[in-house]
Image (tube, rainbow, N blue to C red; front, side, top):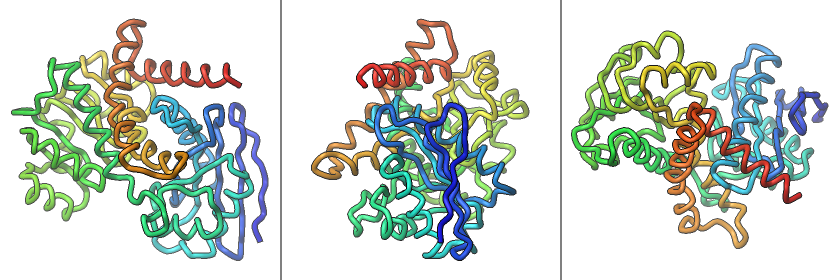
Length: 352
C-alpha cells in the first residue's frame, strides 16, 4: 500500500513523498515548474544516508531540469524523482511499480526518464503501471538509451566552444582530457578522434581505460592526475562537483565542456574558471541531448528520430546564445545560461 504525503518547499510547485513498506519503497518526486509543459526529469536510485539528503538532491536536480528544458526548448518543464536504496540489491518489480503509482498521483504533471541506478528495463517496469514514462526500450515503444543523443549534443556544443576560443571547430592536433569513459563519453571520444583530436582519459574502472586505449588510442591517466593534464578542453564526464576549490587551480586548459551533471561544486567556481581565462560551457546546456531525445516521445504523431536530431544539434546555437549573452551583459556563462532560461520561462508565463 503506497502512502503519499506532500512536502512544502518554497519555489516548487509540488514535492511528494511515497512510502510502500511492503515493496521496500521510499522515494520523492519534485516538480519545480510546469510553466512550459509537464515536468520531465530522470528517476535516480541512490544510497542516500537519509531522507533529508535525498530531498536536497531531488529539489536541486528538479530546478536544474527546468532550466535545461527551457534552454533546449523541449516544450516541457522540470522535475526529478529519487529512490532511497541500493540499485544493486534493493530493486524489485514491486518497488518499481510503487514508483509508477507515485508518478500517477501527480496525474501527468511529472514524466520520468532514466538516471543513475535505473535502466531501460526498469523504466519498462515502471511503465507497466504509469503511462508517464519516457526513455523506455524500443520494444516497448520508447526511444531507447539516451546516451548517444547526449553524446551528439555534447559534440556540437564542443564545436561551439572551440569556435569561441580558437576561431574554428578544428580538432586536429588538439588534446581532450576526458574524465570518465562511460556510455555517453565513449561515442564522444570516437567522434573526437575521427576529427583528428587526441584523448587523454581517466576512469576508476580499469576496463573503461582499456576500452579507451584500444578503441581510440587514448593515453590514460590516474583519476586524480587528469586535472594536471595539459589540454585544449577538459571534459568532465563522470560524477558531479569535479570543478572545485582543489581542482580549478590545477587545470591547464582553455575550455571546460563535458557531459556530466552539476560539474561545479558551487556557483562560485564559474567565476574561478573565468578568472583563469577558461571558457565554461554550462553543463545543463551542453548535455541536453538526452532530454531533447526523450521529449520527442511526446511529439504529436509519436517519436521520430529524424525530427529529434535537428533539435539536438540546436545545442550549438544555444551555447552560442549563452556566450553572446555573457559578453553583452558582462556576466559569467553560467549566469548567462540562467538568464536565457529565465527569458524562456517569462515568455511561457506571459502566454498563460
